[in-house]
Length: 132
Image 1 (cartoon, rainbow, N blue to C red):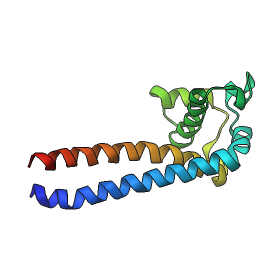
Image 2: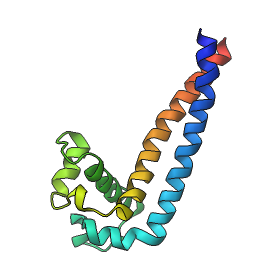
Image 3: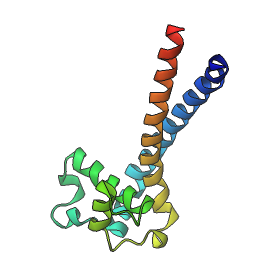
Image 4: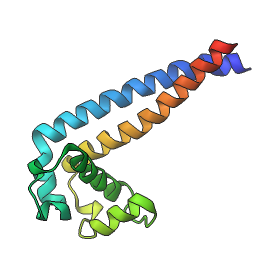
């Protein structure tokens, strides 16, 4: 029974991992090369009132993009970092944000998170089959 599960789960998790990696890369390229300025103008993160985007280190830039994602993906959450993103960006109505602004942000972060889960499943399956 376990061998049948592994026979289907191993290639599926690898395919999902590759699809998530490609989605994240394409979304990041589109966002950083073509849509970043317009995204920041529409979503207006409070940190950008203090300094321009270019002056922040990469970690703060990633945190700003993560706040955008959490606001768009979980608009009613009050828990943990999604709740903090919603408190920082109450002026953003996810339904009013154009799809051309949403998809690169959601593709980037959803690809990262789902890809991380797929990678953990893939490694687990590989380690389990090595012992068998």
